[in-house]
Image (tube, rainbow, N blue to C red; front, side, top):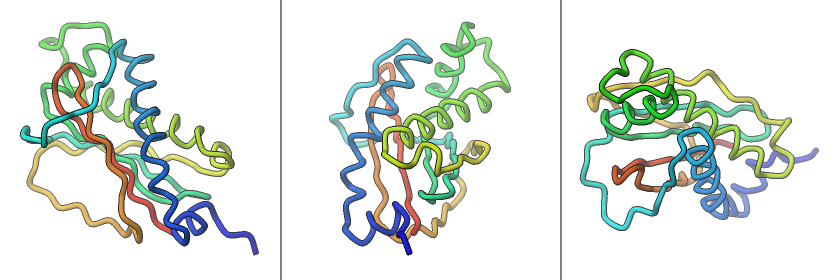
Length: 162
């Protein structure tokens, strides 16, 4: 029986090698869709990242990819996607942030051999606020990339389940 990509990587502890791919996927999406470059974050996170978008992955890779930012960052992302001023963005913030997360997940899975067709993505879910707990059934340490979007911190993480 062939093992899944998850099982092989979890058994060998190789999924940590995916961190640069996760960062590259995010950088490409922000450059193409938002017209801006992400830069590495050199300081510990200080801001409250109170907007979270999540996309589930199922198939050869099972897990959850999430994008966390603050409300100002989320509004600016929506503004850049929609071509309107950040102050004029309303309820479409959630749709825009969900789509950015979805595009990062899709771009990420396409960078790993054998995942493009063998991994499906869920509809994005967006949570606003900080009064929640996320309990993942991931059975390996998650990957996380911290970057700056227009000087504001964002975090992109991938929790993997065998």
